[in-house]
Image (cartoon, rainbow, N blue to C red; front, top):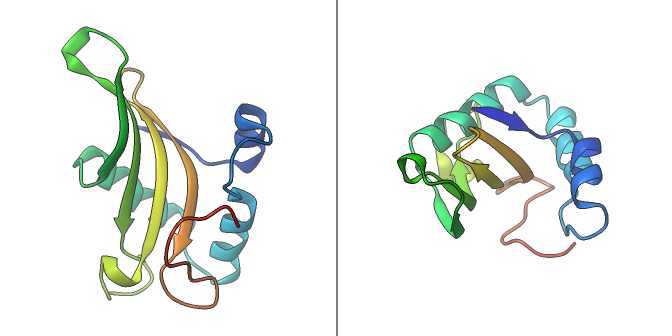
Length: 121
């Protein structure tokens, strides 16, 4: 599974229509010394194991009933052992046909950058 999370790529794809700010999300992860590689591994495992909530789905290709999905998921913070409830929330677009996902946002459920729910700010 290829994960796309570069904020410049996201700006090219979504320009000004997205309420998400991946640049801010990545800055928060770096500032808190969270290992991005481990975080991406957690995200990929969650997608592969289909441990997420589907927000929207559309049939994309006829082979093997693969879909195009908008999902949200809970993942644990790989820097601590406190579980998913105190970890991160992630929203992704997943294309099962081409085996890639675009990460739209990653936000923490704890700490100074905590968000209880998704919003436009």
